[in-house]
Every structure is written in structure tokens, then in C-alpha cells.
Amino acid sequence: MRGIGIVVLVWTSLVADTFTFETIEKANKAYENKEFQKSSKLFKSLKQDDPSVAYNLANAQYKAGRYAEALESYEKAQGIDEAIRQYNIANCYFQQGNLKEAIRRYSVSQKLREDEDTLFNLNLAMKKREEQQKEKEQKKKDEKKKKKEKKKKSDEEKKKEEEKKKKEEEKKKKEEQNQESKKDGQENKNDEQRKANQKETNSAQKREKAKDNMSPEEKMRKKELSHLLKKLSKQKMPTMMYQTTSKEGGENDKNPW
Image 1 (cartoon, one colour):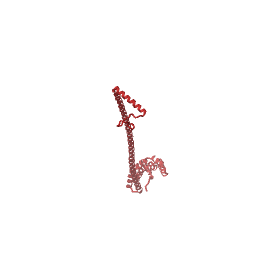
Image 2 (cartoon, rainbow, N blue to C red):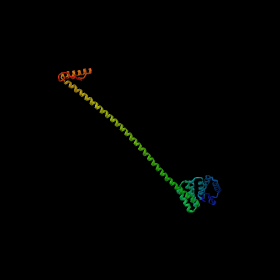
Image 3 (cartoon, rainbow, N blue to C red):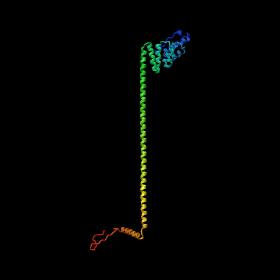
């Protein structure tokens, strides 16, 4: 079963001094005690030329959740078991969410040496990447649908606004037409009144003119006739009386009115 672990440092590969030895011991002990921040700090204080130091530093950084730093340290640890190094590099990419590169590194590690853990992680990364792609596609579809619905809603609101505006314009136009009709009707009425007044004026003028053209005798007869009509009207009598005689010259028995 493959995992991340400390590589035992060869004493002869480091500077043979007490300080370096004590630092390695403290770093290894901190790692075993899961004090990964402390362990990485101690390993980082050592010279990074030795691949084992870089590898152990990378392991401590990975355990501390500092995946970008761990990835950088793993890249420097060339010379360590390449299958394991590629596997751990793939783990760093996986933790960072770079599934494409993680899949590539797991594949390299599996080709170097077949391993159940590597194959499991490879399949897991491929599955997650497929899910990510589906989610991405679904997100695009949802955004497209949302955009389409938003446009539809906007078009409907625009249509309603246009219909409202059209109704207001029609109402305004109708009111203007009614006002115009009322105005035309009033003008026609005024014209008819003016014509009636003019006609009355013309009639009065004609009567006055006819009166002026009457002879004194005609004026006198007209005046007498008018006076008689007024008098008869007051007496509630018929305006005219007809007196007839029979063929023998006698009076008619019938009433004349």
C-alpha cells in the first residue's frame, strides 16, 4: 500500500556535524508526532541539495496542507523512487483541484510500477474530472436557460409596456377626436344660429322695406286689420263672420260659426 512517509536520510550524504544530525532527528520526531509545520520548518533549515531532504520536506509540507510548497519540493527530490515521487506529485495536484495534471502523474506512476493505490486514485481522479465536466456543462445549460428566460421576461415586459403605451396613445387620440367633434358640433351650431339670425335679420329688413314701399292707404288698412284682429282676439270671437241668405232671400237657419 503506497503512502507518504519519511525517507531515512543517509548520514554520509549530509555534512557530518552535530547540528545537522540533531535537526534531522528533531524533524523526523516532529513528523512522527504529526507536528508537520514544525517538521517542515526543520527540514527546510537543512541544505536542499540532497533529494532525501527535499522529499522529506515535501512530505511534511503536504501533511501540513501546504500543497503548492510540497509540489515544489517534490519536483526537487529527483533521485528518490520515481514511481512514489510521481504518485505524491499527483496527490498534490489532486488536492489543488488540478485533476487533469493529477491524472497524468498517476498514469506515469502506474506505468513505472503497477500499484493498487495508484490505480484507485487514478480512477477516482478520472471520475471526479468527468463529474466536473458534467457540472460545467450543466452550469452552461442552466446559465443559457436562465439567460433565455430573462430575455423572454424582458421581451414580455417590453411588449406589455408597448401595449400600455399604445392604449394610452389611442385613448389620447380618441379624446382629441371627441374634443374635435365637440368643437366642430359647436361651430356648426354657431353657424346655424348665425344663419338663423341672418335669415331673421333679412326677413325683418324685407318687412321693413315692404312696409316702406306701402302706400298710405295700404298702411292704414293694415293697421286697421291688425287692430281688428286684436279686438276680436280679446272678445274671443271668430276672426271672420259669414252671413248668408237663402235662395228666397231669407236668412239661413244655420249658425254662421
